[in-house]
Image (cartoon, rainbow, N blue to C red; front, side, top):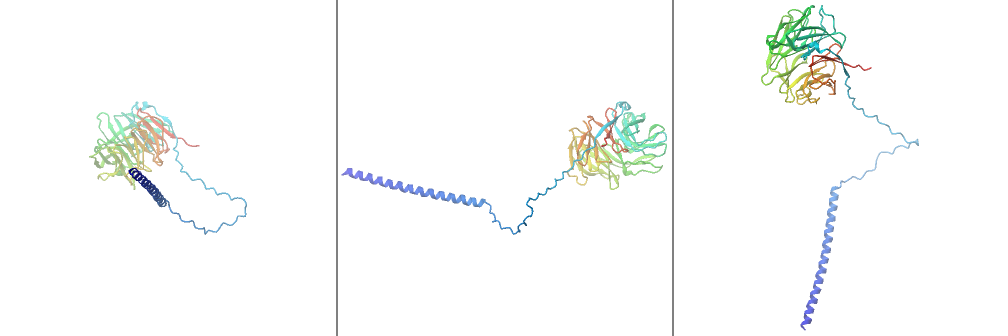
Length: 424
């Protein structure tokens, strides 16, 4: 009897277990179905949200094109090719003449300036003159047939010209004057002086006491700065200076004096040039802190023109497209004096310091000398080319007669003339 009860209990338990397993399987199937349906609904909603809606295209209201009578297809019109900017081609320059360095005793030429025509009775006529100076020599070169230069006068002196920018300041038919900053080789002091060429002799006639220490002079090109006794020049067109000061100069046949003067206290002058603006002349000054200034002859503080790299400006000049500055860091920059926050162009030619630059008054070209080479650059496009001399030029001068030739002086005492190759 007990055995029957035990078997019955086991049977009932087994059936209950089977029912439980069946119920559990049904529940799992329903759960999986619900999860799958919900996941499909989620994916469908996400797809609908990420898919942009497009409007159903409307039928076109434009009338159909008329039937063509020609059975051949019409040619597709060809558009003209776009016009590409034409890059400027720099003119070709070649070395056409080189003087013998013995004419300057193989010493470095400190200054080189092309002067307007000088009319002196005892000298043959010449379309132009070159003035060069080294220690103890101030040479005058007659332009026989451009670009050939022939030495006309060479007299030993006790001076060395440091800068000269005023020539042909003729006062009489028998003599000619020019203005220059020079240093006395015996006493090592420098200043602004007036020189005269009389009967084959080159003499220093007047000194400017207010300019003691001056090493640079700039002026406007003027063929007759001295016309007659008692007539003075425009004081706003001649400036001289040194590291500490800048002054404007009044000039007559018998006197040379500073009319106004300004002394720098926080920096030193490293370069000097001339800027003509609104029929007035201003001194264009570069300093040791990378700043450039404009100064008139009123004696007030110079106006800050621009702030370049915080390195000294070694050379500065004006051009047809803005003010050019060259630094000891080798960077050449072009500036618009009306927008001086950033330069218009900036360029490092060869990584060496820029020694000097000279803008051509007749074109967009500027000659640039570095410690390594001599370059021609267009201030319009900033394209440049090397003239291939691979040495420093101590001074540069453009020919004011043929308006294309470039004269440069090297450290060995020679003058090199580069001429433009005319295209056939």
